[in-house]
Image (cartoon, rainbow, N blue to C red; front, top):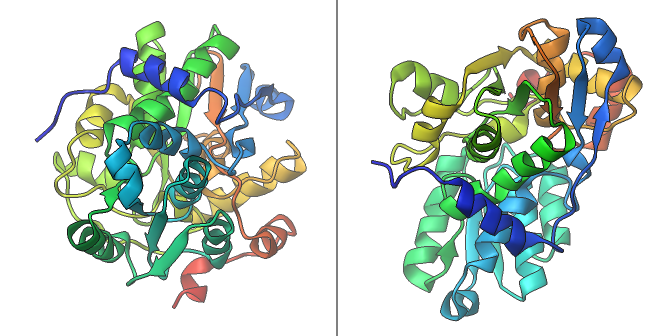
Length: 332
């Protein structure tokens, strides 16, 4: 069941609602990737957002739409890290109590980042679905308002503000490479970009290990997908069997989906650091990875969204130093 697509007017309203709360991030032309594919390649530096990822956009828009009664009772959400950090920041700025529920698969660095923003963190189970059970309890027993990480109109509209920036910053863009997890970012970006440039292509990039939206698209409906350890940890988690927005929007608006293996993700993190001078987490580097692996073939100016930079710095050091970091073995 769907409640209709998030529209361009909602995204424009979100841009006004979050102005002054989030920053407009820069776009850099990547000379190394431009030379490699012989086409203009740009990097949207969203990992330099205030909380280190795009998630602040949607969270800020959702907080802005709360009623006074909802503000008084507080908000709760489930997260693999970046949504929780963005929601915690936005809630603290608005003086709203916030609890973030997370699974044991979430890296400690992301847990610490959320706590630093003033939110309470509860670790529950080994998947987002198990953590969601605690969210549901808090909603039922304490009357808190759930703000989900992606399948929510205000969240999608907030993430869509990134798309509005892109069409202004790269007016001749042909293709946008978007990290794909639950679909909030790619749906918002696609709705914004295609409203202005209907011919533009939107390509979702995910990991081979536990790519939930890809599996759901293949099945033709939302299905349960096992959450697995991966260097692209922020792309983990299911889309929800009762998904109301992002599955239908992704199926309608996204032109292609590409999957990367762990080695390709690691290579992208290294490239971002050594060639672009950017510290980017695995989930945020997948657009670069798809270009390096020749899994996308641009035909015009292309933008890869670097969606987050909240990586454990010890892990980052190991990866960029050339170590073969196997998170699948480390999680066993």
